[in-house]
Image (cartoon, rainbow, N blue to C red; front, side, top):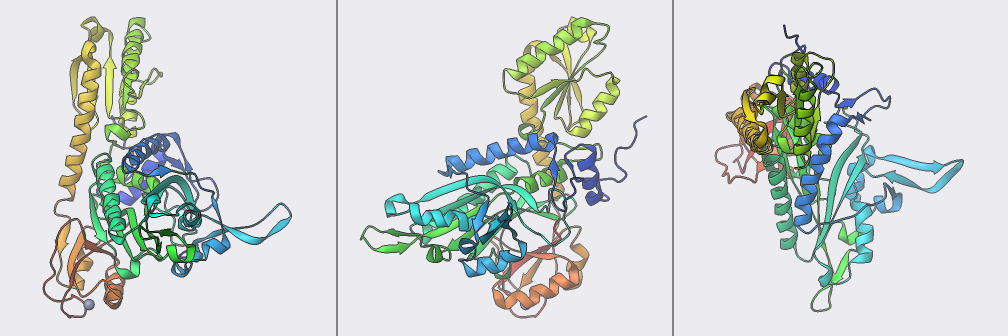
Length: 482
Ligand SMILES: [Zn+2]
């Protein structure tokens, strides 16, 4: 009979399940030998490439232009904005020399690229006619994270997109922040099928150098959250030290307003895995599956016609840009099914001698685990329709799973019971700096983190802060994160 793939059930121990699936499905190899640095393998890379395509398409439609910036940032630029330096210095890898030479000025391996982009913005932006100035780049960045590293979720080198934009007015900048969050929704939920909540982060938890940080959290079925893209309202904090100025319509010199946004594709991939997977293995939405269709020819060794039919189907699907392979290995059909289900291939086509005699094939869906007979003539249409339907279904399942995961809590003790299994919603005094003490108390006693106040829904606070008893000004959410 069927052997067990994982030593634990995903529902019981999602963390352990995640560690095992990375190895079993060959998503990444952790044996490179440098802590926090990961070798990404084809099965995750193919999917992440597709994830990038959707993000970039969305950003381009919003007017962002693509750049490739250097990986290194000179120390004098890196240290220009004081909050930014203070926040990032503990995490920076430095290049101090080359060959036998020691550099006069060391170079930072970018942990993020504000200080790279804005040094050039000051050269490029002259007049209000140059604004808005919207850029992005696809890059790997380096952070010496001192917490425990975790493949895909917390690596010291990770893969992301970062956007950097300049605006003439604060309103334009804020509209762009909203646009960034729409991008998150349109890509992370609509395409990747991962449900998210969108927060304004508390003042003590904002990006170093920002006025405000807005971020999404993915909700995984276990009740833990995975941080998704953040967007930062930088105000004029960076434009001042970097001299990002423009002359306005009245020929007056003005400081530009800056924003940045950082969707981390390697971490989003982790939420796709954690959201959709089950005890049989991975599941991918059709659009971002590393491989969309696997064809298993039955009795092909005895009937050469079968392989021919399989190849014909493959060619038809490839002509429609659908990624497809034929598994013609020596394994038994059952073993093949089992393997490709573990790998999360959305659709499987089985063709045998009896099927092709009737011009038929069997189509199996990974989400419903149901098989149906389809005509080879209309197989392209069947694959497209079922692929779309599978993606919709995965989204629906993900949304259903997270219903009931948010619980109202009236005390720290109640919060403690919820975090780790769900998300606690509580009345809180303030997300300005004066509330930090209360926040620290909640975090210390419950092991959860304050995620912030929701901005995707309108919520009015009432009652008292569950910690200090003062009048509550906010409703905040507390959760454990991966
Ligand atoms: Zn309080």
